[in-house]
Image (tube, one colour):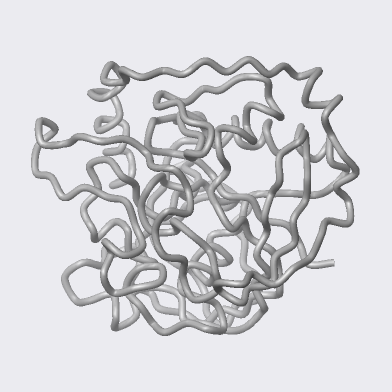
Length: 293
């Protein structure tokens, strides 16, 4: 399975972190700092025009972008090119997605620490995405976040993720999330050997957003999704699909590419990957979703 190569990429860099910062929030402080987040505060983003609902949980604002429902073609559509797509992308199929909210940014280390009382990241920076978190870790984080907030955050489905990455109903059919030029919207490294790879995850929101005002869906860190991974799409004309049963691969979906060791082809909106639910790496994080009420 192609995604398991990520494990090998991760091993070599774990000793490279030279700038750990201290974090000292506790589980108790997360509970004590929590405000009533249930209703959120809705506003229109002055730059992108996106509808954003902000929830304050454990003293940290969580900006969620409204993704209006619609239809799209999922998979290796023409703008993805003829050489880049992998076999697991090639069954192009029609999908209908209901309206939902998706994180404007990847989950930051600041939010993770406020909720969990620890920061597992290799490269510590409050405003950078949390990393070194498995799918199972993300489920634990979300359960605690929901317990504190009395809300129902979750990971996006793989189909929701791709719909939003493509720009939703405002899609301009870009190859990457928000542009045909990856440098405009994503952090990544083109490298041929481990010796050429330098850098670290970047603070969220520094590149251009995509068509619906969401940042960093191409590059920076891979993002876990709810679904079990399948190495071939199944079905057509689907509505809000979610793969709820594992197959022999027993992997969860991983989307978006990352800053480390991933060429541009892995940062395309249609690119798919997966890994074991307990796998964790300095290239893997998450983004929150929540249903539209």
